[in-house]
Length: 204
Image (tube, rainbow, N blue to C red; front, side, top):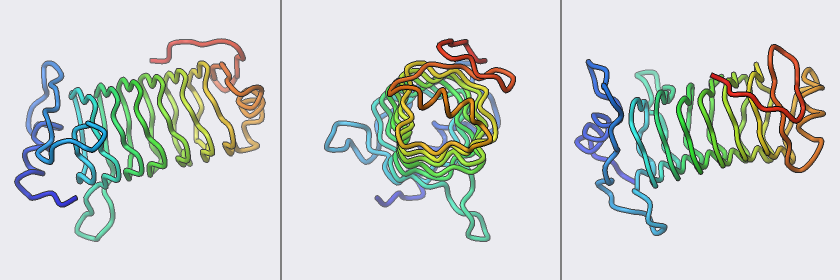
């Protein structure tokens, strides 16, 4: 997918307005590239860098990649105070912060860089993603973490009816491993380095 400079400027102006904070979130409009065969707004391959105070619905940002700096190194993707519904981010990279409310979104095999996850994730799929060095301070409901590298830096989150089949969890977090692998679908919350099996809390 080729994005022109003018298209990138227009989309970025909607994703993150320069110079002022929005009083209320705005909806991301239809893509200049139309829709995917599945009917989603086609933002595939967009050079995503930042999104804030925006509502994104039924869109595909698959294989989006943060633009490189002057040294050829990918800059981090920052998403703050966003609301996404049925948005695909599969194989997008490299995320440093993902914060907001995400419903039925796909984050399969995304790239992360010590990423922080906060907010609420409902019915989301993270299969194949590396959470290495990640900081989890979020609410996960019916999410899939199949085959993920879960060598996270911190686990302070609530997991309700989540799946961890094939995930790699560092032995340092034995209690989390026991809870995550207790059944096909598990519920637990990690608070101040203690795991409470069968419980959920709202993490804010």
